[in-house]
Length: 149
Ligand code: HEC
Image (cartoon, rainbow, N blue to C red; front, side, top):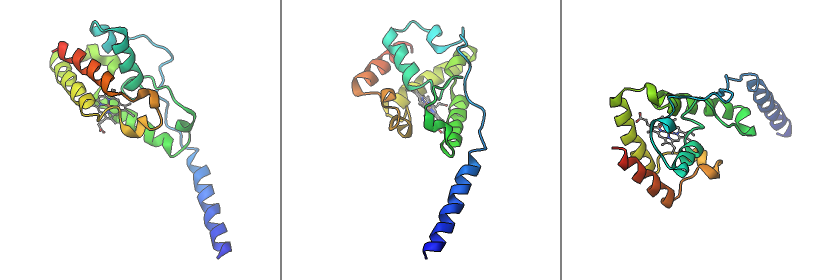
């Protein structure tokens, strides 16, 4: 029995090491400045801007602030898939390129996602406490979003 366990653990260890060799491209832009950024498109209080950047930009922009375990597989792939899906729906860096219709639809969707606490994703805020929005912050953000309608 002990021998079987050893063999299994060895196989698991090798698989774990093996998958580390697969490293998808990082979502980093080396400090590029975007004239099309969401924060440039509207007048917004500094704290509103900071909340969007802290709670949303890791997934919804071209630059993610990675933490060490993001580099370890299989987290690496999960994180990169989240970012890819998130950016396909909404990339705050590219806000200015979107049509008026799309911007209107997204503003509504952003408000709804924040109001219903679906965003930022809970699987993310478990590890990123600063990104979690409390009720007061949610109120500030949704009020600001309503003013933009
Ligand atoms: C951990 C990554 C992550 C973070 C952080 C995050 N999102 Fe998302 N977001 C996603 C993913 C992934 C999707 C794609 C839909 C899905 O798979 O649920 C998405 C979808 C959305 C959508 C739907 C877009 C549409 O087509 O209507 C909106 C709006 C949105 N997010 C807003 C936000 C806002 C606002 C924040 C910050 C308060 C935020 N997200 C933070 C990952 C994230």
